[in-house]
Image 1 (cartoon, rainbow, N blue to C red):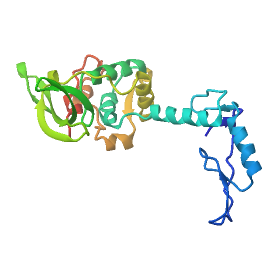
Image 2: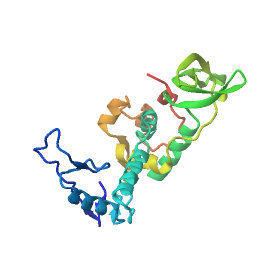
Image 3: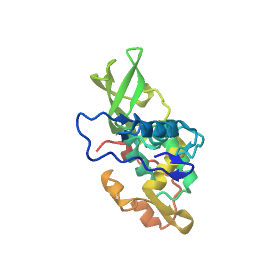
Image 4: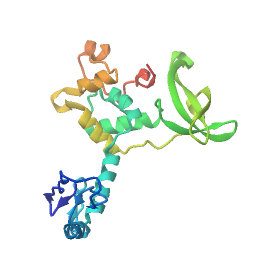
Length: 244
């Protein structure tokens, strides 16, 4: 809720003995109800003064309503896209990179891959169309390597799937990730803990690890070597992007 001169402001309580046919005055954006018109006007005049502060951004000199809108927008920006939570946390688990390096590594990796649920532009029948990633699978590639394949659903103008196909990544158009590095960093810090300088790798919080089926035990090669592996040089585990 917006702050009044940097202090918490309590909304007026709704009268308990209101009758269904009683005439009252209500503030549209707070839902406060007043019986007395003069009291209602005094409250509205207070809300219209540019003395309010957005609690989320600390922006000052706003009316109450503008501060409320600012808080709503800040909350929307803070929400991390659900489709990307699992893939991000898979990349974070057991990483030994410092936070800023880890953010760069995850951001770069996901920029070159697609995850189930996201909708992206693509090319079908020599025309640009929108599709939804339905599934990700591995197939044998050249020289014994594994290559990703994407099952997509082609969408009509109303967002409904009209047909399905399996596409190579080359047929899907690169898109801008729906989050910034700042939002990614905040999400990582809220979802995992670690202290690389003390030889403690990043570990995803248990509840999230179970939710997204993230392994609790480190990879065998790390156990056997008993040494640090540079995650930027380690081959990305393709199964992170393959649907269960």
